[in-house]
Length: 352
Image (cartoon, rainbow, N blue to C red):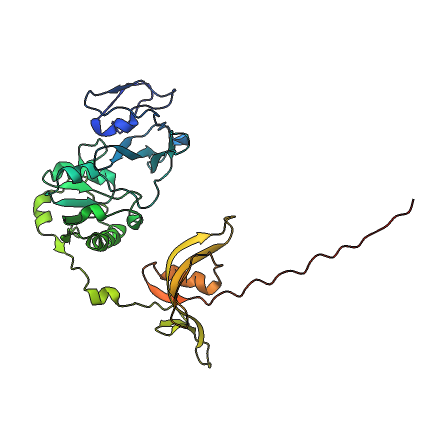
């Protein structure tokens, strides 16, 4: 699909964009190539709010090639972009602008299944994987590999199911920026945990800032050679994986005994036992923020606080520096709520 869309021209979709085969009734007439898969019965409306028609569409499929969801890119005024995922509604069967539930599928699952012996290249984003038209990016530069990525950008890697990378040789070609470096390290850990045979990270330190494989390669850069020289990431030993790591913040200290706060001139005050923050949430009204914690009680029994507890100033500060994978301290059991006394009413009699 062309990057610059004329709202009155006829659009020709590639075979990768079968999901985009029907826009709204106000959209232009579409012409689909003979190799495109059948259009889903409930055609998606890809015209999105004030952004209009998409400049690119990427389709996510399962291992058998069936459409799961898609991601569309929209151009914004001022040169910006908006990336919007689309899924089918379970109630109406129509397509809506919403991300799929976690764990999300990897991109190109059908190719991963069709080429089980091929090495896998993980990039950051669909554009870096196959370009804006579906025929560029890493897939064009590295035809001997299967290219994949996760949905949702550099900060959503943990929302993806990485199990299809089990028993595969994986190389990560990240974007040349700080978010890309963090993404590569996180994906490496997730791929190894999923059972990947090996994981390497390509060195992009000498490339222009923000470079990805959707851009033209600089002179003298050979993509295949970079792949072969990727730095291997070592899998953590079982002992290291079982070892707990504690985080501290300011006056609040973490250790095997739990969380303590130290005030000037006073002994440390115990707050709670060891626990792990595994998620965030809000109450049913969407008003109060909280954290979901797992850990042990002071008696040594395992416990899970799946309720949403109010974040105090202490917990709020700790949350900013503790990732869900870091072990911390478990909150004390909450006191049972006191029952309120019955409401007394006074009878008033009136005489005629």
